Length: 338
Image 1 (spheres, rainbow, N blue to C red):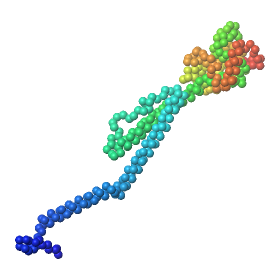
Image 2 (image 1 turned 60 degrees about the vertical axis):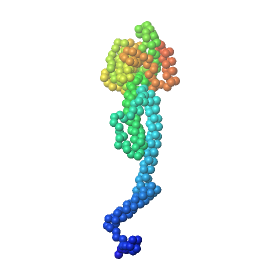
Image 3 (image 1 turned 90 degrees about the horizontal axis):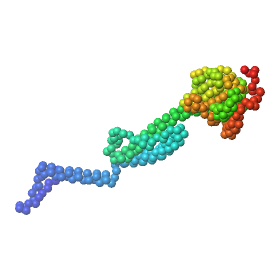
Image 4 (image 1 turned 60 degrees about the horizontal axis):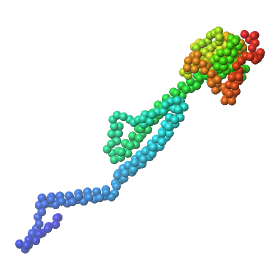
């Protein structure tokens, strides 16, 4: 039972019963409810300001972990930048130099992505700047790696081509060094043993026993295999992309290779003889550079067969042998070999 409340009435000098209307009760309860809500909200805000809820604490930990991960990512990207810069430097200054290729311009290596803004989805967050910076950094590295991969593809193709060029370039003696008895050098204006006058000698002669194998000095294609009054039985090899031709003359008989045949360095293409304008068994060897009939000194192209010391000894012997067959060894030349 609710307590009855009284109010003193000074006019009647008595106590009157206090009657509270429903409206007054509603107003009172409204004030009390508003005060309670205000106190609750104030308490919640004060607590939230000074203390974290478990959910907020979890989110804070996740944000801190993400920030740490981004910082580690940026550090790793910086490390990758340094390694990539070293790779690019070696690519330009070593690999491309060795393979005779122009360095890649920095404007191409550092080129970015064009078009619309790729980072719009990352905008509007608390850490947008950090995310955009890291993403842009990674995209720049990916672009440079792509350029570098294209560079390596080019260098691999160049290396394969250079390997083919290396194999095609004349680089050995036309007959085995152990089989050479004497040599005569290039452009000596020597006295021709049969014609009886001096004229330029646009090749090198290597005397050897009849039947000694003659080897192709580089990879190539046989373009001549025939008899000529001066050269006798002879062969010409086109060495393709390197721009060389080599000629092998005075073979004993028809060559063992045919026109159009692909030959490899060291392959036997014929045998030493004395056909054509020849006084004794030998192979006349010529190197033509940048066009057939543009002879150069063959002695520049023996680097696979001779050491430095052997090379200079070989040149001295060749230069001192102006008259190649003046003191001919009878054991080499034998009529029965024909």
